[in-house]
Amino acid sequence: MHKEHSLTKNQQIIFDLIDKSTEPLKAYSILFNVQKKGIKAPLQVYRALDKLVEIGKIHKIESRNAFIACHNSSCQVAKATAFSICEICEKVTEISSAGLSKYLANFKDKDGMKYSKYNLEFFGLCKKCR
Amino acid sequence: MHKEHSLTKNQQIIFDLIDKSTEPLKAYSILFNVQKKGIKAPLQVYRALDKLVEIGKIHKIESRNAFIACHNSSCQVAKATAFSICEICEKVTEISSAGLSKYLANFKDKDGMKYSKYNLEFFGLCKKCR
DNA sequence: TAGTTATTGTTATAATATAACATAGTGTAA
DNA sequence: TTACACTATGTTATATTATAACAATAACTA
Ligand SMILES: [Zn+2]
Ligand SMILES: [Zn+2]
Ligand SMILES: [Zn+2]
Ligand SMILES: [Zn+2]
Image 1 (cartoon, rainbow over the protein chains, first blue to last red):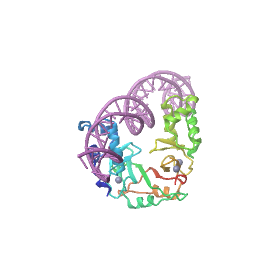
Image 2 (image 1 turned 120 degrees about the vertical axis):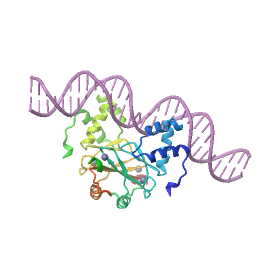
Image 3 (image 1 turned 180 degrees about the vertical axis):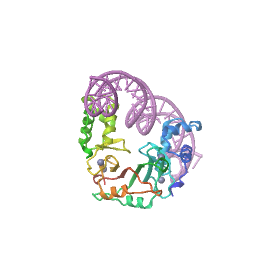
Image 4 (image 1 turned 90 degrees about the vertical axis):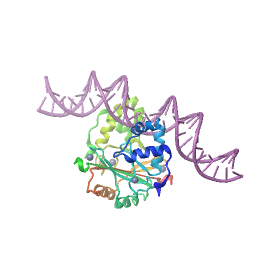
């Protein structure tokens, strides 16, 4: 399973930070928070983020340039992601819906093209903000 | 219909450029291309882009930080967008599928939350690149 | 025509991300 | 164990994307 990669030191530090955060974190906010652990340069952060995304431990929320940990065991290594985003409080939740992922995984466009990967971001108001 | 907004000078210049492009354009590439028409600063470009996105004449491809003109009359003013993106040649096409948009517009998550907006980006290989 | 709003112009700066190069660790196979 | 390949790290500099702040104009509207 994709969760079993052994992380390097920097990857682990940065993953831990993202994993315990209740909100998506931005790269430079991560940088600020790990400087006391010896990670001093943006590139160190971005390299760890790239790897963590690649192995599916975190996802990038493209519309926000921010990163969250994956808590969705059915999510296929960064290949099929769906999120709900509250436009007021910016709360982001990974959507885990068998129906949705099945529908999208099987979606074919007019030319019969099938896709190897997708990212879906829903926007609305969360419970609290309604 | 949403296409009937009358554009201001800068908006028109920038829309024309995007509209006649065969590929998504990035903000600073747009800036470079309209400097001869008197648009000299990033902000002038970003302001026009914001407005054009808001009224649905163009869409932002979030994963690419690039903009394409909307050629999809059924697309509801930037509220419901879907694209296919070729990971080799970077060709981007707006997907116009009644089935897909119906499915997503009606999608409710576990909490019964309905969304006012979504953006979906599919990735794969286009015909030419396969 | 005065008041209001949207748009523009301009300079500066913030925020996000990568290039390039040097060094160090890790696994593997002769 | 040594050479090799491969990955990760550290570091400086720079590229790319986007917004803040303020002044001036144009367009709308009561
Ligand atoms: Zn996930
Ligand atoms: Zn909320
Ligand atoms: Zn459209
Ligand atoms: Zn292609």
